[in-house]
View 1 (spheres, helix red, strand yellow):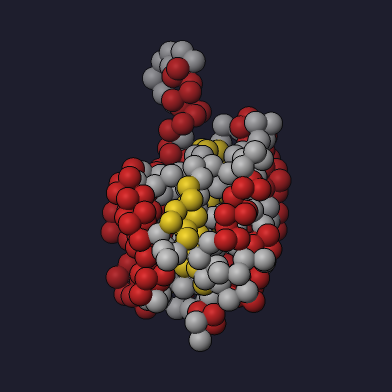
View 2: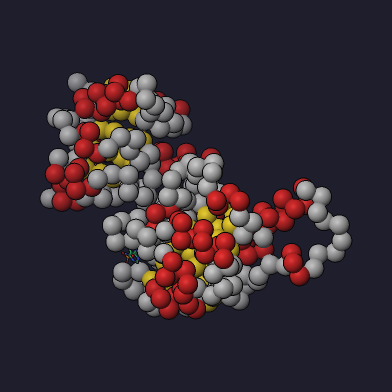
Length: 324
Ligand code: NAP
């Protein structure tokens, strides 16, 4: 009998065909209040799940008897209660490479846009405000030659460091749990404490996972440590930053500007004060959102699921204890 799989995210037709060859597939393009119970029932009967994040609480999968694996079409896995999955002997696999460079591109777009005020000045032009030669009030800040502090120098962080150092001649500071000799050698990156990174950097870019340890890592105290000309870019997860504290810092000029791809609540509520601020560039969580990369991510996650359920081969396992 073919294993049962639940697919709960839009993926390329080629992957849908491939999954159907090997598995009995229940497909949900979106989980809503109307189909939530149906989705949970299908998940409880399945051998494997594939989608982006998890649209239900992990504990709602507790009664699943056959469930062996979930592959998430993302690198972040903060939507899952990993301990709960481990206790229930469910393997969680995430993504490795397909989105690293694309997300680093977006981080750099935010650095550039926030530094040079691209979104704000675009709005001003559309409002008919460009009446004479641009002078000081519309000037921005340089990017080249400045100091870029990267909080979390993993895959994406290193790709941002490469762009900053080799592309723009920036000096790189970083924090991570362990030293990164390759980035130190290739990009002259220097590891330091977070407080020093915040105080010394012109641009601070967050590129670390959300966890109990990193939740609200950047709050009012940390924002005060930044230069008044400092720019904060967050492509990690919204809750790594205390968002109300960031809003205050942007409103009061504690920091100069921000470039954000991620928020504490997504989609960003339409009454968020962030939407009223000129000194923040907002992107709707599009770090990996190019067609080429999203397709590659789905194909990679699908391949992981197939390899695991058909051949017992596991890759990018978040909770390897289950396999031990
Ligand atoms: P990664 O390769 O696992 O790198 C994470 C880095 O963060 C590592 O260098 C790690 O240090 C460091 N780190 C972890 N906990 C830390 C802590 N408490 N203090 C300081 N550093 C810490 O992950 P990645 O692929 O670069 O992705 C990073 C995050 O970006 C993901 O978890 C995800 O949430 C987010 N992301 C967002 C988007 C988007 O669309 N905006 C797209 C992809 C990913 P060690 O190496 O020393 O362990």
